[in-house]
Length: 119
Image (cartoon, rainbow, N blue to C red; front, side, top):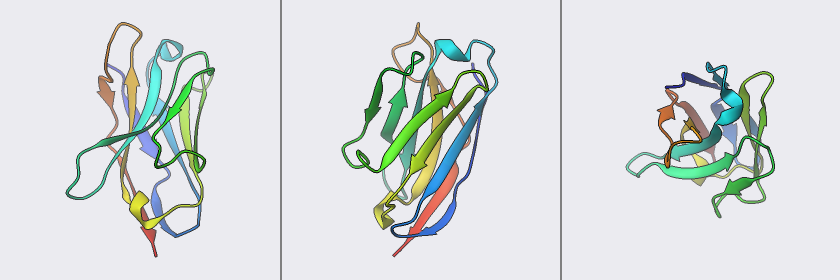
């Protein structure tokens, strides 16, 4: 189990930007695929973006493609989500998640950070 701590959420106007950060506790951070998910009020948690250990493969939900960028710093055990051109529909609690190379799904989750986009 990896301990994950998110930061960087807040209130922003539509069209603005935020950068979320996630600190991971594991020394084997490089072995994990890292992801961001979000959950809006009354909705199920949904995938936002992921990045594998080699930094070569990233995936994005269609709803954020072209606006959000996921990145990671393996030396610092950090993963980031740069969010630009934010929309009110991006309002949600954002969660950082980790998936080991031996797992089929994300098994470690942070506590979440609130992102609110006002119109």
